[in-house]
Image (cartoon, rainbow, N blue to C red; front, side, top):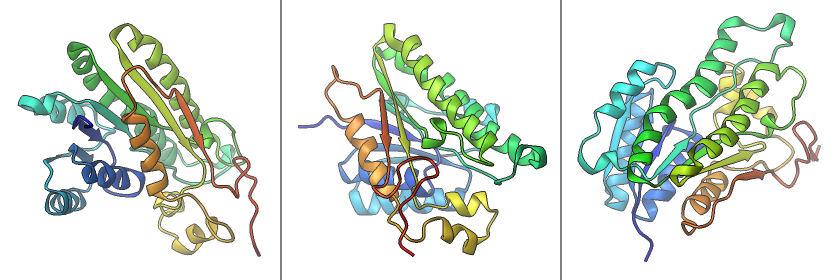
Length: 255
C-alpha cells in the first residue's frame, strides 16, 4: 500500500499546478496548495475535499515576496510541517519582445517568480526536510531551459536558471538524503500564453493550433510518477514534449 504523503504545490490555482493537486488528491494524499488568487485557491480546496475526502491546507501568498513566503511556511502547525514533496510549479512568461525593446516590468516579474520565488520557498522548506532526513523537491522547468528561442531571451534565461538550480540543489541536498528532480515540458496548453500575451486570447489560442499540445494532466502524471517511486530511485531530469514538437520552435502543424 502506498504511503500517503504531504504535498506542497506552488501555483496550484491553474494549469499544471491545479492538475497536479487533483491527481495527488485522487490518490488520497494530503495537500498544501499555494497561490496569489485567494478565491481560486479556496474554491479548489473545497472541490478536492468534497470530491476525495482528503485534508487540504491553503496558503495564500505571492511567491515573489520572501516575507510572505517565510510567514506562510512558519504558520504550519503539527504534522503539516512534515512536507514530503515540494512541487515548485509557480512560474510564468510575460511578453515576447527582442532584448532591445524588452519591458523592464516583464523581466522583473519573470525573474522574481521563476527564479527568486523558487529559491524563497525552497530555502524555507529544505531545512524542514533535512531535519526529518527525507523529502523530495520537484522543479517544473521547460524546454526553454534547454534551448533559447527568438524573443524568449529573459524567460529562457529564467528556465536555464531552474535547470542549473536543480542540479545544484541535488548536489547540496545529497548528503541529507533529499531527492531533487526537474520536469521540463514542451508546449502545454494552459493559461501560459494568455499570460505571456497579457490577456490576448486570440493570439494565445494561435500558439496551440494545428497540433496536439501537452495537457496539464500529462505533466501532472509525470510529477506523480516521479514523486511515488521507491526511496532508492530518483528521476533527475525528465524532458517531455508533444509528439508534434521536436525542439523549442519546431512543430509539425496541420494547416
